[in-house]
Structures are given as C-alpha cells and as structure tokens.
Length: 301
Image 1 (cartoon, helix red, strand yellow):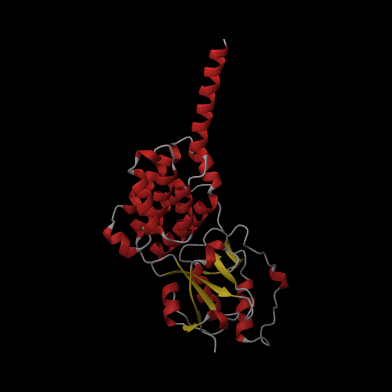
Image 2: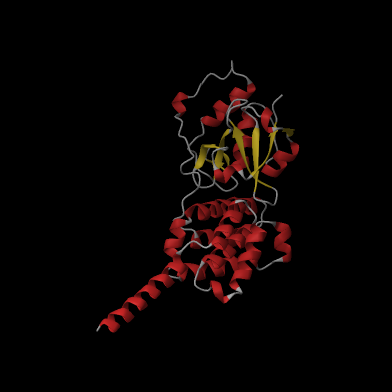
C-alpha cells in the first residue's frame, strides 16, 4: 500500500511539474513581447517563425500569436507587402486558427493591449486605403477587422477627455489664430468618425484638421501625408497649440492630430479617432501614440 501511494505521489508531482513548465513564463516569449512593443515587427516575424519550426514550442500558442500580429503590422508597409503578397491572408488564416484553440481566450485577455494597438492600426490603414480609392483592399482589411477583432476596444478608451461645447469660447475674434484653432477644434468633440469625412456630420483624421484650419483661413491639403509634406517642419521643443502632430505605422504618415497643449507642456492633441470620433488624447503618456510619432508641422505664422 505504501508503494502504491508513493507511485501516485511521484506521478502527481511529475504532472504538476510538467504543467508548470508549460504555463511558466518563457524568456523567449518575453523577448517576442518586448520586441513587438518596440515595433520590431520583422524581428518578431523571424523569431516566431523559427520557433514554429521547432517541436520544443508546440505546447504554446505564443509563436503563432506573435507571427500573426507581426504579419498584420508588416502588411501595412507597402514596400514589404510587394515582396510578401500573401502576408495579410496568412495573418488572417493564422489568427483564425489561434482563435479556434480553447487556450486563446486566456491569452487574448492577458495581451489585450497588443490587440487594441493592432486593431487601431488596421482601422487607420483601412481608412487610408478607402481614401486612396483602393476599394478591394479596403474591404478586405475591413472584413478582417470585423471578423477577428470584434469586441476589442480602442486604445483611446482611457485617453479621451470629454469637453463640453458650452465651455468653449464663442467669440473668437479677440483670440490669436492658434487659440482659434484650438477652440474651433474643441467644439467638434464627440462628432463621429466617418470614412473620408470632412464635415461636421463626420470626420476622418485629415478631414478634421483640414476643416478646422480652413475655418481660420488656412488652406491645407486633404491627405495627412500631404499635410505633413506641405507643412513647415518644427522640432518637438518648439511645438505649440495649433500645430499638427503626425503619426506613422512604418510606411509613411497615416494619422494626424491638432496640438492643444501650450509650448513646453506635455503634448496633448485633439483628433478624429477611428473608434471614438473626435476626442482629445495625451500623447506622451500613451504607449500607443508616443512610439508612432512621425513628426510635427505647422501652418501658423
């Protein structure tokens, strides 16, 4: 009887030990997470691919998970996509396969911030494709967003600040052009995001900045990339309210906002968010926005 219990104890110990080895943090998985957060998507793709070729990592979904996210991000780079035409399809197929695994729910919940970032980047990409008339690509990306990222909230959720229009200054005559830009922009907080929108019925990011600046007599191009090209470039230390802040996902300017913070203060912007409409966001305290800053420009004197 003693031998029987001893064998049971040993088997139970080995079982628990094996379970621990599967669920414990793996340094190589941690490295994938760090590289992904730093935007090193090509390295994440290569490393996760190598892991998938080794049976040692068959116990985990992490290599497949990070490969799919890296592919979603890399697909937005037109130069990379030319050499890897099936990248988006591969990302979609792989992500669907992961989602069908009963272990994925717990993993998704513990890595929600990554899914939020990817969804927001895909929304920006879809908006840009739609604006450029690439309808087939737009519909494909939009379908992927709807099918794979349904229920994933926006990274702007905890960054927005609702400002009542009643608190804005109605008499703009005595204000400087920079102050006018900020006050006009604030009046539109809460207006929904609309693909290619450029009126108070709905804005996209560049439609919003163009509309606001036009209200104070400044003509700017329609696309965010062109707004950056045509603007007077400024350094971060010289950024003031009324200036524009531009963002990139690695393949050129893809988003733009209006700076509403004063010179020297932590940068805060108002912009047309793809998921929340016109909102304000803290840039420097946001892990999502700060690493995507492409540059600063101005149309003010």
